[in-house]
Image (cartoon, rainbow, N blue to C red; front, top):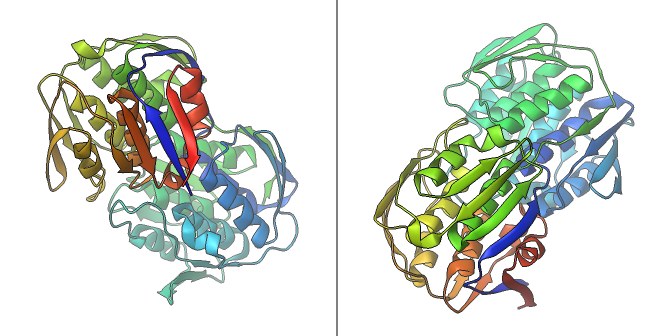
Length: 419
């Protein structure tokens, strides 16, 4: 067990390079299971615990992975197991992408039900609806999901709610189905587009990713390819908010500025100066001039739910009253009790958090209640007066590569200690 030790009060200066997108990588790696001919060379894979977990899962079903830095060579040309039931599968939410991938390739899949962050109910009803529309029989019992089909036949599928997971999972299965599949009311997040682009590079025929309607013409097989994962929108947003909260000037490198527009707009509303370049943003901030704002999370291109927790920390030291309305998950304010230990003034009512800005936060012993909450507590520690100790940091390592090193290089005083 480890904990992060932070001595707050340092302004941030310098450059930080953003890694490959976690939410894209954890779907692209399972998608590589669908390749029966050739090796997939996937570049810009982030060095995070969720990816390491997926490595072990892929190898447990018969795939082979060779790593060279952030490039993974994934070989799934042999016969794979259609049952994924290891402890790693049960540990992470993204393991459900194995269902769509294995169902597409083998018309059969049995996967243990996954875990992940405790941020609310994450039903799989839209996944199941999509698989069944394609012709699969789906059962859920004894902690696992089983999907089988004689044939997968293209269909028109309207999702009742916008779901990133269901959009990607059904898209995977439909890629190797017979005929055309039309998915409506789909998620438009950048990582959905990235998975579609990866599949197309392997020989799929997918159009419309990034819009409300995706059309998939099924193909008989996919082939290996070389592909680079997009930069991580959420990691970039986290460092943008950290720079805004701490003050100073930070260049966020290796990003797609368009993906950051909803975050940039709110930061500018709060008084942060942002300069945009082709693949970078420069953040300039004086925390004493931060103004309150209101945020409502919503699917892309709206404000990302994965960024609202760090954003709440920034609001806690902004002048005036800020309000966060969390429209995606019903249990994403658990970290607010930790933030209150540091002196924040927060009232949580259901899916709404009302935050009155305070002059300063004070260091305290806190814990990371989930992945993005952990990043929020890091930012809180960076701006707090005195020492902050953060426990349960394994959540943070699921999605932020080398977080302590990256912040140290920006001038933060942060270290790791064994518990």
